[in-house]
Each structure stands twice: as structure tokens, then as C-alpha cells.
Image (cartoon, rainbow, N blue to C red):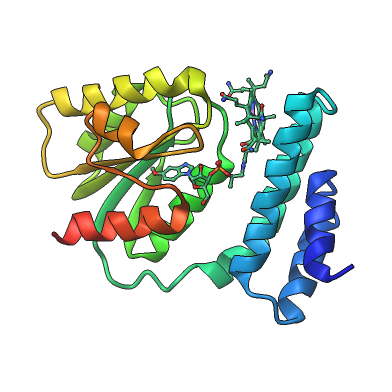
Length: 210
Ligand code: B1M
């Protein structure tokens, strides 16, 4: 089994103590950070499928998520650019009712690498808190909303509506997360949709420099 396959297998079964070392070994073997990250994202896909089938339950999903987060920590310095060009501030959070943060954290990392100062509001963020954060921080150019559950898509809609109705200007809203589509993003009035963290960073840069 290759190192990268080992990473994938150990994330799936939530071996958070082993994963960081394996990720480092996979890097040392010459695998790219992007390929290792993709292997871990694939693991979470498998975990999700097992959960859907009823083969595993929430605690197993949680430990797999923890293992992936530990692996991402090792990749962070490799994935992150120097972030030297300053494009403004990005407020990011997972919408209200939703506790998933791995995708949001990756988006945060990539947007920071693209040159933004990132203010991460965490998970389960009410619409009003996004608005407050824009008021409390200077030069906010991007508000990034993540959501992983179909049941929290209405919260994403409410967040975008609240941001647009706030009277505040000078920023664009990017939305994303597994159940979100470009059609849905357009329907709820978001300025952009991104299917993955890398694209979110590209769109954020495009919007902030347009
Ligand atoms: Co959750 N969960 N979960 N879960 N969980 C899913 C999402 C699910 C698809 C699993 C399944 O059934 N197959 C399912 C949702 C079904 C649906 O709504 N359609 C589900 C469910 C049902 C639940 C609970 C309701 C389970 C329960 O309690 N019965 C519960 C809800 C809790 C809540 O949020 N209120 C729950 C809980 C959890 C844990 C807490 C145990 C844990 C999360 C831990 C954590 O995040 N710290 C967890 C996990 C780990 C998952 C799966 C297995 C993995 C998610 C993940 O991290 N993926 C997930 C199955 C799956 O995704 N296939 C599942 C890896 C990550 C890199 O991908 O977050 O999609 P993702 O991010 C991607 C893109 O979506 C995108 O970029 C990233 C890649 O570059 N992206 C953006 C994300 N945000 C973006 C924002 C952007 C742009 C792109 O712009 C701003």
C-alpha cells in the first residue's frame, strides 16, 4: 500500500494519532500536498457513504473528521502561500445550525493564502453575526458562507438576504458546500458560488480586484 493510500485508509477509520506522521511521510515521498488532501477528502466521502448505509454512526464520523483535521494541519504550511499581497478582509463561517467545519477551514486557508486577512466566525453562525463582523472589521471585501446540510440551506438563504438587506456595501458574498449549486447561489442572491476551496480563493480574488 502506498503512503497516500495509507493516509486515506487511516483517516477513514479515524486514526488521528497516526495520520499526521503518515501525511508527513507521504510528503517526504514526493507526493504533492494537493494529492494528499484529495485522498483525505475522498476518505470523508467514503465515511459519508458508510454513514448513509448505517454501517457507521456519528461518533465514527466525528473521529474521522478529527483525523482529517490533524492531517490538514501538517499540509497547512505547504498549501499556504505567503499571503503577502493584501486584498482586504474576508469574513467566513458555517451557517446557523451547521457544525461541519473541515471544508470551511480549507476555504479559509486558501483564501488567506490568496492574500486576504481572514476572520473566521466558526460554525453555527447566525446571519446577524456575519453582519456584525462586517461592522467590526475594516476593509471587508468578501463574506464566505459554508453549509454542508440540505437542512441548513434555508439558513444560507437567510444569511445572504440579511447581508444584502443590511445596507452595508463594499463586499461580495461567496457561498459553497456540498449541497450548494451555482443555481442555488444565484437564486438566493449570492455574488458567487465555488465548488471547492481552491475555486473559492480564485473567485474571492477576482471579486476583490474587479
Ligand atoms: Co455530517 N453529514 N452530519 N458530520 N458529515 C454529511 C454532510 C452527510 C452528507 C453524510 C451522509 O449522510 N452521507 C450528511 C448530510 C446529508 C444532507 O444534508 N444532504 C450529514 C449528516 C446527516 C449529519 C448529521 C445530521 C448526522 C446526525 O446527527 N444524524 C449531523 C449534523 C450536525 C450539524 O451540523 N448540525 C452531522 C454531524 C457530523 C459530524 C459533526 C460528526 C462531522 C463533522 C465534523 C467537523 O466538520 N468538524 C460530520 C462529517 C465528518 C460528515 C462527512 C462524513 C464529511 C464532511 C467533510 O468534512 N468532508 C459528510 C459526508 C461527505 O461530505 N461526503 C457528512 C470533507 C470536506 C473537505 O468537504 O466540507 O464538502 P466539504 O468541503 C468541500 C466543498 O463542499 C467545498 O470545499 C471543500 C473542498 O475543497 N466547500 C466550499 C465547503 N464550504 C465551502 C464554502 C465555499 C466554497 C466551497 O465558499 C464560501
